Image (tube, rainbow, N blue to C red; front, side, top):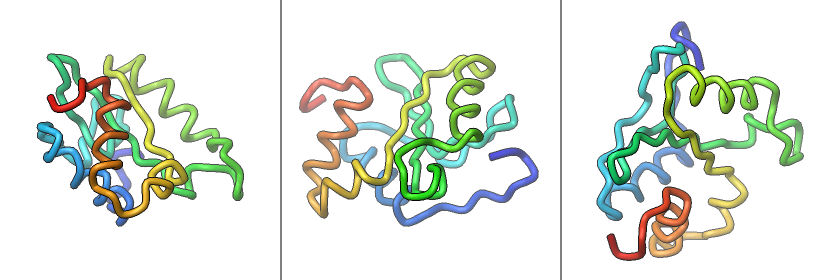
Length: 118
């Protein structure tokens, strides 16, 4: 998450990012913020910058749905320091959508506050 770490992009993150263009967004991936955090994807929605964090199993405690301290800290610090909204795509919610591109795109539209078909 910090400058010294090289970004690694998971298959999950790739899949989420691939569904952003079809809904009319132009994501920038692995963006290094002034806070030192790296954001999985950044999009512009209605003039507002939104960071998208794709949270795989390594962002949570064991097999629980409780985020790690470092994940909680990032969710607090990025909006406070970088001044952008941050949304999370937890792996279990994404996995539930199966292979359906339509369901995935609908999920992202809702998450990002986009009206249907925009």
